Image (cartoon, rainbow, N blue to C red; front, side):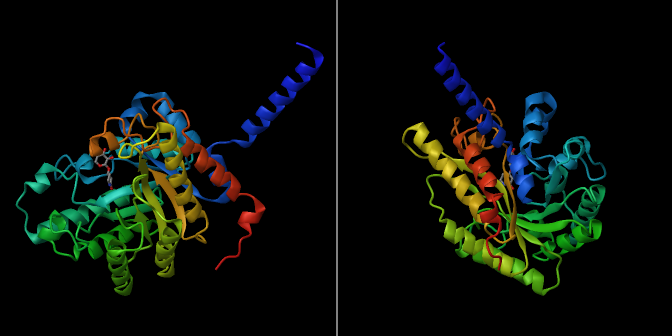
Length: 357
Ligand code: XIL
């Protein structure tokens, strides 16, 4: 190489080094602005594949169990609990100084056969639910920052779903009961109502609003609303509308967490690069709205983090569905870079000094 080429090459290396130095993990950038960035973690790969845990711990400061804390996995029988997997996730989080979201104490899905097939009286169902919540939230008392106490209580018609065993056997009051017991079990945990399809203003968001507003009026301990954010580039999502929706929960005194984000691209046509770019802008939009929500939206979690392990192919029937921010080989997708750039930008003084409400 000639002398000048060497100098140019050296300068390029310095530049590349500077870019790399600025390009830290999501976690480092999120920590700097006090934002919780998280992902759902599955126990199989966590135990079976070291890259999975290394990447999760490197990129996120918050973790949620994809399945391990649900009723079915935790309750092989009425009198026994299976703690291994849930404990493994909490231990992983603690070893890596990550916070934990608990998901979920009450849901109509993933229940045990002894429960769904059992013939229990209303009083017995109340006892079972109370025992479940006190035991599970009690075991992790002080270790779970926020619980999804009740998940998806609304049906597709935006009224309380009648296909929930809890609704059928206890009645609509199961929701208030669950929050009161969760609070009793872990008074320090933030208690969330979590649902899908309530991200934007509209009938379903109105139903969630009415539900949580009613709870507040009745003095039920509730601190936040979880917006699942299973979304697709085929659907439009106006950042202004999302901001307005988050703002009205904030006006009730509640926090918002984006709890289960993924962005489908296989239900659209067009070249892959273009669809990945659209996916990246959706992630960016949602994070930007959170960061500008004056502290109402304090956490964003994706439902998994690598396309190698995602519920989407099974759920949508598209075997190649790739809704997450890392590809199957853990390489960053445009969506990852969009989140990282957005978090990095948020730590810049101009942004931090935006006037608060
Ligand atoms: C999903 C898990 O990702 C799957 O592994 C499991 O088979 C079914 O449940 N909304 C929720 C999550 O609140 O608990 C669901 O998780 C996805 C939809």
